[in-house]
Length: 191
Image 1 (cartoon, rainbow, N blue to C red):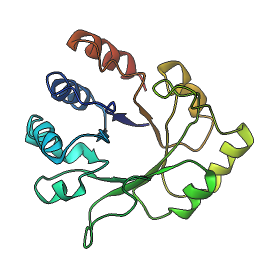
Image 2 (image 1 turned 30 degrees about the vertical axis):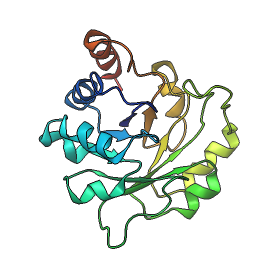
Image 3 (image 1 turned 60 degrees about the vertical axis):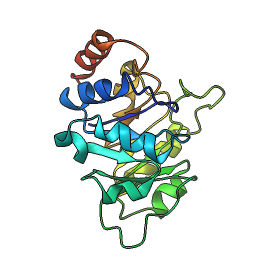
Image 4 (image 1 turned 90 degrees about the horizontal axis):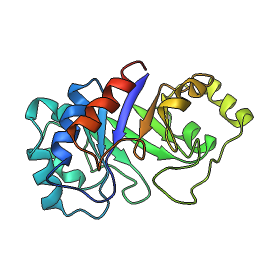
């Protein structure tokens, strides 16, 4: 399964570049740089603090113009940033919150669908899908990434449906130290 890490809302310029590097070198496919309140300068500094050979696996959730300065892995469209820049030809993904939105976004590299389970990082953000609704993903051709409350213990449950992978935010030990992250990566390598 495709594994995506999503950074927490508030960047930690001391620890985050090392954590992102650990995740990508540990086998994760993408890291989405979410940080909705970060300035363009903060996002640039974060990208520059990550080894250049890993940039192609970073995806921006905002400050899309930075894609012109770095060899990044794509842009993630959302309510805050719903359209790519003019003439952008790289990889695109989008946040979806209904099966209908997933179906409307065929042709993208992938979409995230949330919340599959009760969110860990957003208090009160409850699971929004029944098993019957998730079964409708069988008819979808765009790769769908499960998001929302995904934990290592729930990944087998995701395999019952047509998910191409999963994305995590709250289960990742962003506030831990390098050993916490390495333990987490080792635990996740079985998926």
